[in-house]
Length: 160
Image (cartoon, rainbow, N blue to C red; front, side):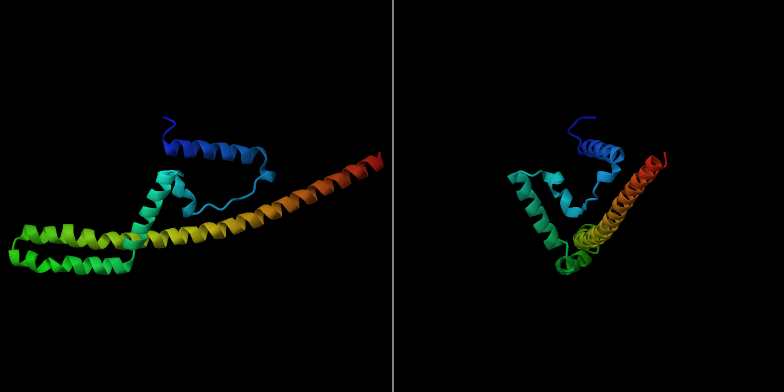
């Protein structure tokens, strides 16, 4: 695979990070990764990439609302009388498929994706808090084990 494939690069970075964690698990600190963290991967971090990200987010936020779905439904219904008046099944089916379904379902699907993304981000934050707590407990346990090991070594040296 080429080095320009973002999936390949991401997998390689992930494998390297996992290898590092496996080599020294006690120094690893869990990090929080949410949907916002991946924005720069789509269009890059340069000025053009930032502009494209902003425009894309602005359009998605505007179109991805139920109000946009209602507006698009009203807009689609304007052409319904003409489709019915044609009495052509092909035109009526085309109106349903191409005008109504595509126009109205687009914002509804985006709303659903936004809800799912918010849910995933909330889950990621909760998981992150749990991982940080578990990591902190693990570090404390390792410190206790190290102290116990030192005490045992001290007792062994006194007994000998």
